[in-house]
Image (cartoon, rainbow, N blue to C red; front, side):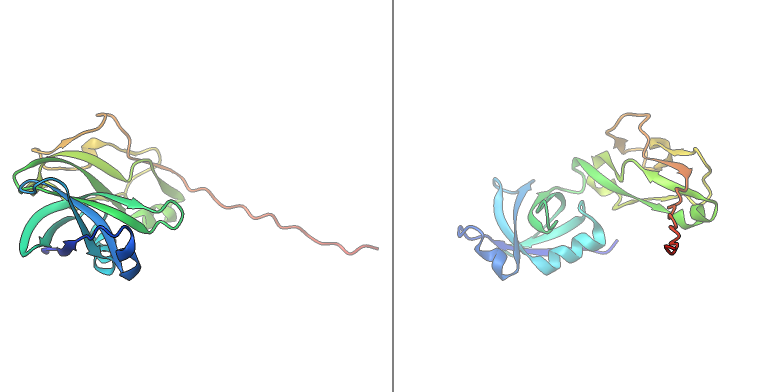
Length: 193
């Protein structure tokens, strides 16, 4: 895994002003951080990290000439534009026990379409408890050879045995269903006599 470094700088008390010049406000907290620290991130760099690594990315934060390891705990978005308006980053050691939302990537759904099937996703991520060092960035699942009625449950996620899923044991994450065809009504026009 590549080391992802995101630079943070001190947030001034001028509420909202730095958003105008390309920054997104945030809070840094956790191990070896004295209280919650108000910071800001360069918007372009932050958006790139989230686009490539997801909203629970494991990252290094460079702040005040120090580099600390952590993960994105929460991303707040504007309700209409979906633009990022705030971010929380939790600093932890790699041996620290944490709870983290891990995104699930369902691969191979093109093969399902050829067989008139589709994947119906109920949960795009899973809550996992365990050491930070063992947390995967994503969970990759191949659904290409699944059949009608097959379901994806905790047992299909193939996580490290030292990680625990923090959800109901029989929770269903996705199901294979019939492909719903989009029927198009054709209206024939007849000339009036």
